[in-house]
Length: 331
Image (cartoon, rainbow, N blue to C red):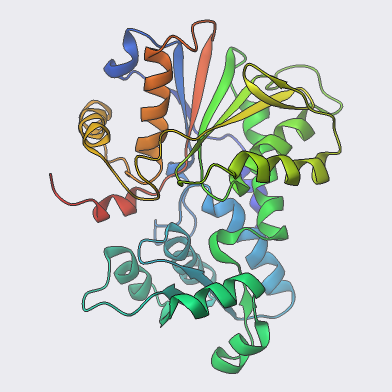
């Protein structure tokens, strides 16, 4: 199979969604089903991770690298996707996992190992050091010649991929959509969505997105908006103003919502669990609690508060990650 990213930018799966939880207060709701994206025969690579990984694999192949090394935690969607991509495109993969090796691997790491990924557990201090500096010499001493992808795939190549994703989404949304909702952690995918939407507008005037991009911060980190602002200022070179819906980049406005993390990354509380249970029942499919449940929960709260009364239609980017649902204890 080709590593061409264009394949995953054509005819995105966008569907109208009817969720009873939202019926009384919601504008028309669409799901951008990135979770349905697959590549290779293993049927595991999915979601926004495709857009970050394929440009890295293209560069690695072009420079004759046969091994990819990257970083993540025990429930890392990124490592899960990288392992599957390695199997699909014939790369060896190494996952440097934060912390001591547990007696029993998480389901995510079991999958990664079954897909051929070599797992190496490293101390949290070494993890921070390697992630911070991407110490290529140390990695190559330990694992041989390797293409190193940072945690989450957020390097220049990965950023180019999520910009392509942003352009594709902005160009294919139904015209009525004036709000996009998505999860945000490091902010790299959200940055790509904003940048891609702005790029899609350049030289075009019809059928493009000119609304608000809402990023639901799943980390207990109030500095995400500031980091995004700084990064976008360098990349877009546009003036931006603050208004009631957040920060403007070109003709695309965006904001970060910091109050739906429910205690921090992968944390849950009783309210989220109750909402999550209803959401899964009504969607008829599993929803991960780390990202997507919090996006839907934040959207539900905003609608209930009447904050989106003038909105015509909302599109939620379903970024995937259902495999991480196995990390939620049985209720």
